[in-house]
Image (cartoon, rainbow, N blue to C red; front, side):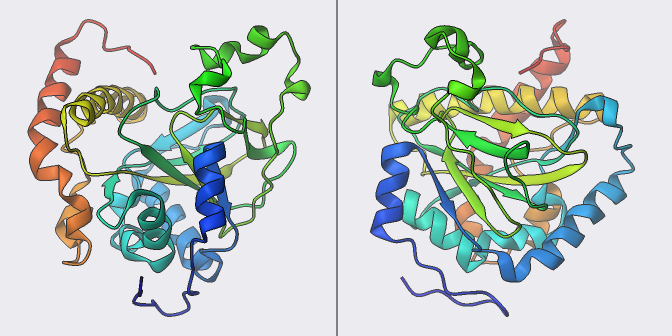
Length: 292
């Protein structure tokens, strides 16, 4: 598949071996795929947080802005960057659909969890750290093949240690050391956790899925939207009390998207009304304190 190269972008190829690794183990690491761009990416990340005016308080443990790249035309253009398009096209097909991610500043680690249940419609997350992270400093750990439910993983990911009667050090989970520019790509239902933490570590994500076609995919996407709206509203209103999710994607992204990018944003027209309805349900609910 030919790619239009952006200045400084390396030509990337997702090998059959990498694709097979992802399908078998539920994650894959693409080393240095955005290394040439990490300087301006880091600057744009910081600019979004600065414009938000949010206080990066360590006692909050994690400060999140969601959606994230949608707030910066330059970061949003990562959706047509050869590295991102090659990764998502290789794993989901050329008609992959963008789903919003978040920007995070962490002051604590995260325990074992998944980002969504197993589904017929595959949901993929790309995580990018803006500091070097390794053992004990906040990098990700994955339990290989934990997306394959036949291996007996517990329904509640937080009980993985109890389910197998082991300590965290005993979990057969590689510690994925990462440098800025690496792409950590995984299915939402692959078990993952951070390895320790470091104060103020920065990470942002891009999510994607295949086109929503068929009854099973429709049901999966309806469940995803319900979780997404509740999660985004709850997290965001803790920082910005008047926050209201305006649609599936952020306004800046929709106003600045190129013609090349727009086929990957096709879900907006179809599902923005659903998002609006879910937002109103959330606001009317006496359980506005819902948490993910």
